[in-house]
Image (tube, rainbow, N blue to C red; front, side, top):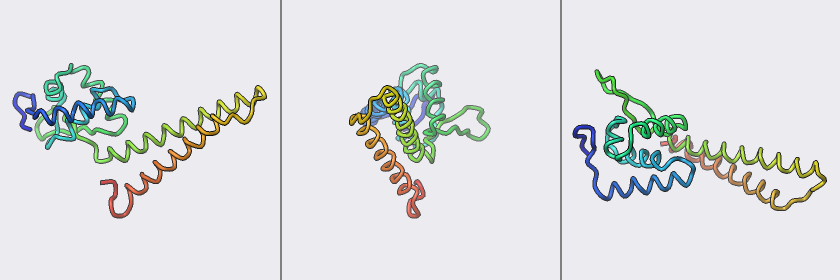
Length: 162
């Protein structure tokens, strides 16, 4: 990829990859454009400005700004600058995959709290032994434990999250 007047030249194969990343992340609740931004940054050899992202992905600057803020908030992107340049540039965070696992763990923790509320509500009306709620609770706890194990393995002594 080379940068010319903010628009990056990308191959048809890279474009297909970027589009698939958008669809993939959309299935996890991140807007499709956010996933496409991640795809673009995964293929980039250097930091990219919001203007270049906008022109390359052919999306509005406001949409890029909104999605970049979201991706920074969830720990997937970092802001950087180039010497003597006041423009903000974006890169994939060194902690992106650790943060992605942590986000999933938090999601399962929240699901466990919701299931507990449901169980308490049912018990307060005299309903007990709902196997579907019990299965959801067991599944959610298992998924939380699996993700916790994955996080520990990713951060293990030989990998250190990189």
